Length: 144
Image (cartoon, rainbow, N blue to C red; front, side, top):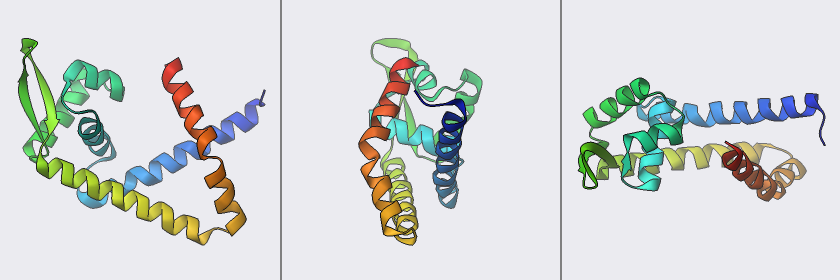
Protein backbone atom coordinates (compact mmCIF):
# COMPACT_ATOMS: atom_id res chain seq x y z
CA UNK A 1 0.00 0.00 0.00
CA UNK A 2 0.93 3.64 -0.28
CA UNK A 3 2.42 5.59 2.60
CA UNK A 4 0.55 8.36 4.40
CA UNK A 5 2.70 11.14 2.95
CA UNK A 6 1.99 10.05 -0.63
CA UNK A 7 -1.72 9.71 0.10
CA UNK A 8 -1.72 13.19 1.61
CA UNK A 9 -0.03 14.59 -1.52
CA UNK A 10 -2.60 12.83 -3.74
CA UNK A 11 -5.46 14.27 -1.71
CA UNK A 12 -3.87 17.71 -1.90
CA UNK A 13 -3.44 17.56 -5.67
CA UNK A 14 -7.02 16.39 -6.17
CA UNK A 15 -8.25 19.22 -3.92
CA UNK A 16 -6.22 21.81 -5.85
CA UNK A 17 -7.55 20.53 -9.17
CA UNK A 18 -11.13 20.63 -7.89
CA UNK A 19 -10.72 24.18 -6.57
CA UNK A 20 -9.23 25.41 -9.84
CA UNK A 21 -11.91 23.76 -11.96
CA UNK A 22 -14.66 25.00 -9.63
CA UNK A 23 -13.33 28.55 -9.99
CA UNK A 24 -14.24 28.49 -13.70
CA UNK A 25 -17.94 28.55 -12.74
CA UNK A 26 -17.50 31.97 -11.15
CA UNK A 27 -16.99 33.38 -14.65
CA UNK A 28 -20.63 32.48 -15.26
CA UNK A 29 -21.83 34.14 -12.04
CA UNK A 30 -22.23 30.96 -9.99
CA UNK A 31 -20.50 29.89 -6.83
CA UNK A 32 -18.73 26.53 -7.05
CA UNK A 33 -21.50 24.95 -4.95
CA UNK A 34 -24.23 26.39 -7.19
CA UNK A 35 -22.42 25.12 -10.29
CA UNK A 36 -22.02 21.68 -8.73
CA UNK A 37 -25.70 21.45 -7.77
CA UNK A 38 -26.77 22.65 -11.22
CA UNK A 39 -24.47 20.11 -12.85
CA UNK A 40 -25.87 17.27 -10.77
CA UNK A 41 -29.47 18.28 -11.47
CA UNK A 42 -28.71 18.61 -15.18
CA UNK A 43 -26.90 15.25 -15.34
CA UNK A 44 -29.23 13.18 -13.14
CA UNK A 45 -32.55 14.69 -14.17
CA UNK A 46 -35.35 15.55 -11.77
CA UNK A 47 -34.23 14.97 -8.18
CA UNK A 48 -35.90 15.20 -4.82
CA UNK A 49 -34.29 17.57 -2.35
CA UNK A 50 -33.37 14.79 0.09
CA UNK A 51 -31.60 12.82 -2.62
CA UNK A 52 -29.89 15.96 -3.91
CA UNK A 53 -28.66 16.84 -0.41
CA UNK A 54 -27.22 13.35 0.01
CA UNK A 55 -25.54 13.32 -3.40
CA UNK A 56 -24.00 16.77 -2.88
CA UNK A 57 -23.17 16.24 0.78
CA UNK A 58 -24.95 19.45 1.77
CA UNK A 59 -27.08 20.11 4.82
CA UNK A 60 -30.73 20.97 4.12
CA UNK A 61 -30.32 24.66 5.01
CA UNK A 62 -27.42 25.17 2.61
CA UNK A 63 -29.18 23.19 -0.12
CA UNK A 64 -32.32 25.28 0.35
CA UNK A 65 -30.30 28.47 -0.20
CA UNK A 66 -28.57 27.08 -3.29
CA UNK A 67 -31.81 25.76 -4.79
CA UNK A 68 -33.53 29.07 -4.02
CA UNK A 69 -30.82 31.03 -5.80
CA UNK A 70 -30.75 28.72 -8.83
CA UNK A 71 -34.55 29.01 -9.02
CA UNK A 72 -34.36 32.83 -8.82
CA UNK A 73 -31.86 32.80 -11.68
CA UNK A 74 -34.22 30.67 -13.76
CA UNK A 75 -31.70 27.83 -14.00
CA UNK A 76 -33.83 25.20 -12.27
CA UNK A 77 -37.50 24.76 -11.56
CA UNK A 78 -39.34 23.14 -8.68
CA UNK A 79 -42.15 20.74 -9.51
CA UNK A 80 -44.42 18.69 -7.27
CA UNK A 81 -43.16 15.14 -6.81
CA UNK A 82 -45.85 12.89 -8.34
CA UNK A 83 -44.88 10.11 -5.90
CA UNK A 84 -45.22 12.36 -2.82
CA UNK A 85 -47.24 15.54 -3.25
CA UNK A 86 -45.76 16.96 -0.02
CA UNK A 87 -42.30 16.98 -1.61
CA UNK A 88 -40.81 18.73 -4.61
CA UNK A 89 -38.39 17.73 -7.31
CA UNK A 90 -36.01 20.07 -9.04
CA UNK A 91 -34.92 19.95 -12.65
CA UNK A 92 -32.84 22.12 -14.93
CA UNK A 93 -34.50 24.61 -17.23
CA UNK A 94 -33.28 25.19 -20.77
CA UNK A 95 -31.29 28.17 -19.47
CA UNK A 96 -29.79 25.97 -16.74
CA UNK A 97 -28.77 23.27 -19.20
CA UNK A 98 -27.18 25.87 -21.48
CA UNK A 99 -25.25 27.44 -18.59
CA UNK A 100 -24.10 24.02 -17.42
CA UNK A 101 -22.81 23.27 -20.93
CA UNK A 102 -20.91 26.57 -20.94
CA UNK A 103 -19.32 25.76 -17.57
CA UNK A 104 -18.32 22.30 -18.83
CA UNK A 105 -16.82 23.86 -21.96
CA UNK A 106 -14.88 26.42 -19.90
CA UNK A 107 -13.52 23.64 -17.69
CA UNK A 108 -12.58 21.50 -20.69
CA UNK A 109 -10.84 24.42 -22.38
CA UNK A 110 -8.97 25.28 -19.17
CA UNK A 111 -7.74 21.70 -18.81
CA UNK A 112 -6.73 21.54 -22.45
CA UNK A 113 -4.80 24.79 -22.25
CA UNK A 114 -2.96 23.62 -19.13
CA UNK A 115 -2.14 20.20 -20.56
CA UNK A 116 -0.75 21.94 -23.66
CA UNK A 117 1.65 23.89 -21.42
CA UNK A 118 3.05 20.78 -19.74
CA UNK A 119 5.92 18.74 -21.12
CA UNK A 120 4.50 16.14 -23.49
CA UNK A 121 5.59 13.25 -21.25
CA UNK A 122 3.82 14.75 -18.22
CA UNK A 123 0.62 15.36 -20.17
CA UNK A 124 0.69 11.79 -21.49
CA UNK A 125 1.26 10.41 -17.98
CA UNK A 126 -1.85 12.25 -16.79
CA UNK A 127 -3.88 10.96 -19.76
CA UNK A 128 -2.64 7.41 -19.16
CA UNK A 129 -3.66 7.65 -15.49
CA UNK A 130 -7.31 8.49 -16.29
CA UNK A 131 -8.65 4.92 -16.02
CA UNK A 132 -6.98 4.44 -12.64
CA UNK A 133 -8.22 7.82 -11.40
CA UNK A 134 -11.73 6.95 -12.53
CA UNK A 135 -11.51 3.68 -10.60
CA UNK A 136 -10.39 5.63 -7.55
CA UNK A 137 -13.37 7.99 -7.88
CA UNK A 138 -15.78 5.07 -8.20
CA UNK A 139 -14.26 3.35 -5.16
CA UNK A 140 -14.53 6.54 -3.11
CA UNK A 141 -18.19 6.86 -4.11
CA UNK A 142 -18.88 3.22 -3.26
CA UNK A 143 -17.15 3.45 0.11
CA UNK A 144 -19.02 6.62 1.06
